[in-house]
Every structure is written in C-alpha cells, then in structure tokens.
Length: 384
Image: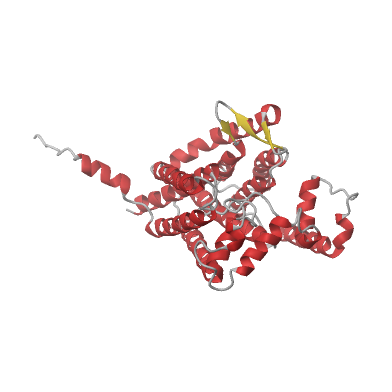
C-alpha cells in the first residue's frame, strides 16, 4: 500500500520560525526599546549620529535575539564549556597583549577590537548552569566550592584590567546560578551580615578612611575615590563628585511630571557627563520626571517577573538556572545604574538596558534575551 505524504509549503516551514516567541516578554522588550529610542533622540540630539547608531544597535540585538531563540537549550548547553574556556583564554591574552585606553587594559585586537569580558556575562552563567546540571541529584559542598572557583577565575582577571563594573555583573550572574542551585542560607546569611557590618563601619568612619595617605587593600586609588565620593560628593563638586552631583540635580529638577521631551536643561546644556551612556537615566528623569521613572521601573519589573516565570517553568535544571541568572542580571544592570546615578551607589561603568548607548552591551542584551526566548519555547514544546 502506497501512502503519499504532502510536502509542506515554504510558508508552512517558515511560520514556525516566527511563532512560539513569549508574548509578555516580547511586549516588555518592545516597550523598553521604545523608551530607549525616545530617550536617545533627546539625550543624543547634540551627539552626532547617536540616535541612528542606537537604532542600528537595537536592530542587531533583535537579530541576535531572533537567531539565538531558534537554538534549543540542549545545544546551548553543549556550547557552555567551549565559550567559557575561550573567554578565559582571551582574558589571559588581554593581560599580555591587551589594548589600553584611558588607563585600563580591557580590549584585544584580533583584526577588530573586542572586549572579552563582555563574553563572560553569558559564558559564566552558562558554564555554572552546565556544571550543576551534571551534578544534579548529588550536590555536595565540594560541588559548590568548584562552582565558586569557576566564577572567581574570570572575575579576578576582569578586576585586574581594571573593570569593576563588568566584574560586578559577571560575579552577580554567577552568584545567582549558585543561589538557585540550592546554596544553603546558613552560608549566605553570614556573608550578608559581614557586608552590612563593613558598610556600616565605612559610613561611620567618615573622613578618616578617605585621607590621601590611607590605602585600601585590594582597591586602586580611583576605586577608593569613587566610594569616598559616594559618601560626600560635595567635597569635590567640580572634580570627582561632579558626575554624581549633576546626576542628582537632573533627577531632582525633573520633579513629578518632568520638564518635557527635549526640554531638559541639564541634559542639553551638557551639565550631565556621559548623558547617552552611563548617566542616561539622569537625562530620562529630568525630562519625564517621577511619573516616567515609575513607568520605566515598572517596565523592568515586568520583564524580570516574566523572566522568573519562564525560569520557574523551565523543564531542566540547566535551563532553570540559566533563565533565573540571566533574568536577575537585568535587575543588577538596572539597580546598579539607577543607584549610581541617584547617588546611592558608587559610580561604575554599568549601562541601563535598552536605554544606554553601546554596541557591545546591546549585543550581550540580545544574547541574554534570546536565551530566555529559547527556554520559553522549549517549555511549550515539552508541554505539547
């Protein structure tokens, strides 16, 4: 008996590629991307082609998101070890043959200039999620110690460049994986208490520890100055405290409703340094006020909530840990950036997702969101 099977049309083969994307997550991405384009048009109005370039970077990120979303989590897991090893090798290469700019050696010339540390924002959580997937059902203290070692190596290399902002992001992404893997609160609480005590002692000691002749173990002078500036930016209002003070002035001057689109005086009179990159939140706050800031925070909250929902419903340990870590990485980005601009955290080079200008950061953003989409699609395939 001959059975004839009808060959699917091109349309029937193409449609599944464009379907299956997570609707709520897609909505959050589009809303935040729109906010980013509006903000960049105003903040980058006097900065040449920043608006056009920001749009191009977003299109590239969306393209990467689309492509990565087609890769099943099982294939992503097979890439974890190679990406991690290549990333660490490139970080070591930066130590010996890196490109130095503004006193920092963070880049490597391989025909084009790349920043290897950006790769580790994705490679580290991938590697740790792979590790805990392999140890599923038999986790012991040595397994967490091994995960800690896998995390410490790239973080130490990034700090040495020095790049404290990227080191914080890589460290937090790795710690999120370790936490979701089941790290006991008996180990977490003492660390949190120690940190709280150290911060309290730092604040209470005030001017004494910020004297020029006082050295801070493990930190460079510029990192010490950033912390001391946080404690009292008014001590050097035209120098190290200028960024923080101008950011706070811009946020405060926006009031409840903001000064209006394209009407930010601190922004357009160029009082806000790095107004299209690290301090773009100050420009946004000045023009859209408290109402706009609440809307932006709600947008990030919705994205994070949806990402955690995807993580909770993921079918494997690997995809659950990876989705959770990537989602909370967006929280770290937003919290650190808004905190440093508002004067509650030291100034570090952490961009605000979708809003800040930057090609490399946008590519990393697309990779992370593409992985979340891939995990969401795999969950629905398992359910059906």
